[in-house]
Every structure is written in structure tokens, then in C-alpha cells.
Image (tube, rainbow, N blue to C red):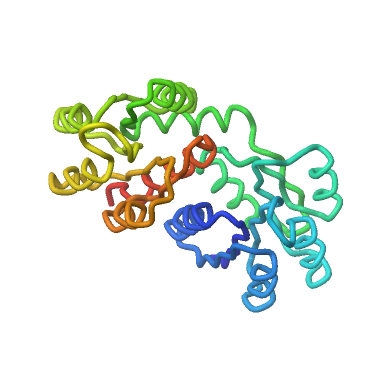
Length: 265
């Protein structure tokens, strides 16, 4: 077992990575800001740190510089959705162990982490090969389907195309009753659910799903920030609630988290 520190301003990403690494027997600490991350780094002395570059107030490069001032040899993997060549050069100049883009299949990330812990801290890791990424991605399709429920054809099409390219099996429904009928026939592994639909809104659909003992992951999509609605979704066990327009990278992370948390034991 290793101690792992995750520093990322996205709470959902922290929760996802904590779940993944905890499932592999590791002790995981998370921080949603650079300052909090540095404090945990000094307190916990992690075996390795997973660091986002783009964070408010104190970005990942500054965090990395301060980590290096504390421990020049500490293994650090940069995981970012907005990395440029210039940022990668700066990060590698500060001795990062690896530089990975968000959106990689979780299995690739876990394998990279395992390689890091099996080698000396001074050894630079090669990035995962295209074959490894393809192999891990193809396994997603075997984990069950995703049901996208939204009354907007453009949203259904956008999500369906994106997730299909990522290797998932995707079905779509334009309203709540249709979605419930589809769930009755073929249980999806994960549901992406619009909150504002005519006739039966997303909260009502989720209540009915839970009443029918559906235990899979659910992601809510909404164009509103109505607090009671958002809290109602979370109280019913939604993985997260995201605003529109949707961020595809975050949607995929939510899907991965939901599938992980509802995986058969």
C-alpha cells in the first residue's frame, strides 16, 4: 500500500481518483487547492503526488516548484486537461515523473502509477503507448451501456457520439417515460439525465428509478442552479450535477466514477 496525494481543483476528479486508488489498496489524500495540497504534502509525505496544472490562485507549476524545494526527488505525475507543449516542457524541467492528459482510461493511469512505485524515484517513465490506451478504452464497452435522457436532440446526439467514440455502448431517450421503459427492458450501467424535460422532469425520473431499485450511477444535467433541485438529485445518489453546455471531459469522468462506484463486488 502506498500513500497518494491528489491535488486538483475539481472535487469530482479528486473523488474519482480517491475511489480508483483506494480500490487498489492505497491510502489517498485529496486537496482542491495548491495551498491545501502543499500542506498535505508536508504532513503526509506521500509516495507520489498526482497534480493538476490549471488551478486558481496557485497553479500546478508553482505547486511543483514548492514541492521540489521541500523534496527534490518526490515522484509527481502531472494530470491535466489543458496542458500545452510549453507547460509540459516547464513541468518536465522541474523533474515530473510523467505528464498525462485527462481523459485517459483509468486503467492506463493505474498502470502508470504502478510503474512509478516499482522504480527508483529518479527514473523517468515513458508515457502509455497508443496500444495500451486503445486496449483499456475497449474494455469500457464491456461494462454495460449508458442511457442518455434529454429532450434536446442536439444534446442527445453530442453525448451519444462522444461516448461512442470513447468505447461505450450508448442508447438515447427523448423523455422520462421512454427512458423508464428502456431501463425496464435493459438495465443501463449509467444514466445521464436532463433535469428540465416536458411532462416528467429529471428529478421525477430519478425518483422512479430509485423506487424501481435501480442502483446504477446517474449524472444530472441542468441549465439552472435551482438549489432544491440540485440537492434533490444528490440526495437520491446522483454522482454529480453539471450545467449546460456540457463539458465532455467532465462527463466522461463522471461516467467512470459512477461505473466504478457501482461495480459488482
